[in-house]
Length: 144
Image 1 (cartoon, one colour):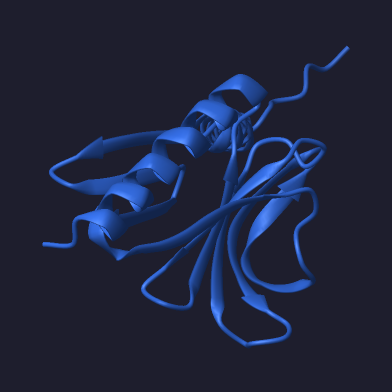
Image 2 (cartoon, one colour):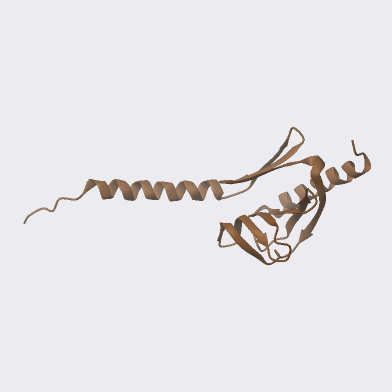
């Protein structure tokens, strides 16, 4: 019985591909957000947004995302991340949604730019909504 020689190149390539796919999944798995230096920062993998707190215009809860065309991004099960075009206004919309079945925060900033976000934990989404709403109310009452 002759033993066949396996090509090590293809084995290494398969392992590297599996590691790259696993890494892409891990960095996009959830949304990371923080507020520092008067800016709201949200990151999910290669998608990130930095918005000055003074530029927030309005915030609300929505049950469904509006109709949008994907510029680039991805959808997987109940997650949706990326940059989209609003079909009605043809403006750029950033989407950081961890669970499509739960309410999403709709944040309008710089007069017309929109950002939709939620977390897999609905309580964290509610807390973030209340916190951002407080910032918007305080900014309207005391503009600097």
